[in-house]
Length: 631
Image 1 (cartoon, rainbow, N blue to C red):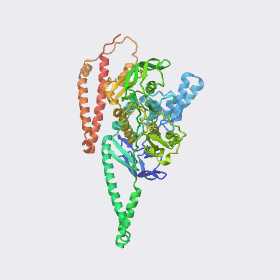
Image 2: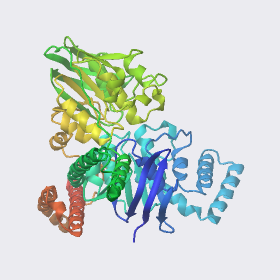
Image 3: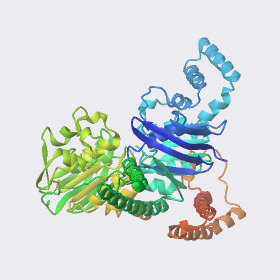
């Protein structure tokens, strides 16, 4: 039985239909990805599924007693409350009471006066009457699972930790259906990997919107696509959807071409006049009118952006050379003993957790910051185009046109003079949007506008800081293709793992200690080359201080030693099974099988991945326990 159902649902804003006769069922345990171009109405559909808006026509049904929670696209909550209070707001009706009790408990711990004791007692009585103790425990449990400190101010958190706190607020009510809008926004690669593992263990139904292709490939068990008001369902993973969608678009184009040819022939016939007015041809006339109406009602698929990057004069052969560079703020060293040589044509990806110093490294290379020690030299004839993820180069109060052309009517592109209106149409800006202020644009539109501004500048060094944010998949792939063909030097800061894999030839990876390690290839190549990280559980156990005393550490029993000796063979067995299943799923014929067989194979791969992780953790635990205690 489904948890949620849409039947012939219609939704429109103004004259634009977002949903037309949409049917949908969501079942427990599904992980469904909703895809669509920017502006198609994905966020509006999430609001419909959350019950925030009602369909204009059709039915919306939610199984009685079920809870739905939603994580919005932007973690833009501006709150001075502590994290506990923000998370508790996910429990409607008791949030204020829980927050008051938490604050009173903190106050009593620091100032245990009579008034504080009485206030705490009153709140305890109210919580008991409302069964609030169980709900308070739910808040504490979610905070613990997500690694959040409930006592710190929400406003002090970084973008990634705010995202995690907002996810905690969505999870605290223990929802049966979880709706996520661009959940990887503002997260670094480490946090995205954590989110994937967390959601893979989620037992309810999950529906999410994402343009992160690696995230979609890992998470989705089914794809929903919203295209020109039509909602379609594609069983299987993202690659199966891509293959099926390409075939569908080819068939649609062929049918439209045949329809348009027939319509053209009928228009020629009607212009003959006298034959069309004969009584026996009235049916043909009515059929032509129906064809005209059908053609008027057709919604064409939105066009793709047309990107063209103007490369400047060739730079010198050496672009950057760093030797033992150190940089810090105050006593904190951000970049430690950094040495590298970047040559003309190199395509460098810069990877690291939020706050590790990726932007600092870029500014050092560009000369905006000076090292506190070491030497850093730059090559000759550098012409730099810089894409800033904060979009600071855009004036929010000026129009779209003025931000690109600076008040002029024309721009120079590859030596040719073009009208700015025509140029901006290449970036999907219709004429009616050209005079709109930038502050009225969506995130994806602002990114396209910054690219349009950037690509008017001749450059032999392209520096891009998170260029993929808010771009739909089609635009993202076009940008990827353009950068891949760019003949100059590239510095790319990105958390998009697939984008890195497809664009860069080497990577600079910044650790939390400030070391910059260089690897050949992109993100996946770095994963294969880096030392295997210890499991989080083992790292946490090793980090916890051992209690002082005379008790000797426990040694491995005979049974545990036998278990440890057998684990390498078990790991090899699971890795072989993982490789076999992955190869099976990668075959094009896999998704042509029975749906139940497809789902069973996908579940088996998920179980094998989980078993392999568990065995690695057990191996590390037993190995650490069996080592001698060195005083």
